Image (cartoon, rainbow, N blue to C red; front, side):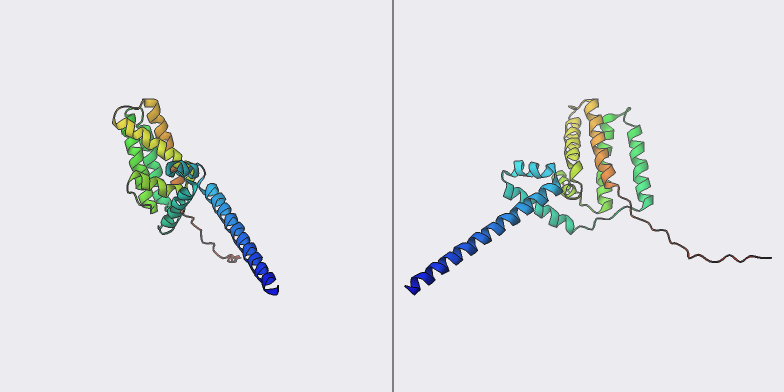
Length: 196
């Protein structure tokens, strides 16, 4: 009789431990999902839709995070930021005369800025994936701008669409244009000698 009670207690203990482990696992998964949704915003749902399942999307987003963590992303020196800003202003000034060319130049300038910051500039999907980690709010803009640029190359994008593409590229450009903090050296106060 004592053996049967001991067996039931052991089985109940194992079942309770399994339930606790399952609850902990589900809680962990829920927290991970929430963290990824918060970090990636709309890109999270896009990944779910593209890959067909939440678990595949979350694996992909985690892989993006790991890949970008290994990159040496740096802020721009103020002089570099000024150069890029000047290039952007010059580019915008040419839009009226040649919108199609300005869209192409905007894409190139964004890629140049990405490269300067330390992002790899392989194929478009890789660039968009990398950008989504640190700049999830504008990756949608980047994708939209790229789609318009591709249509523009085939002369299928209107001037208004090309204007929108430049606006989208500008949103990403502004996000990427991080400037390194410069701290000015504070000189210790020195007493000023009074001459009489």
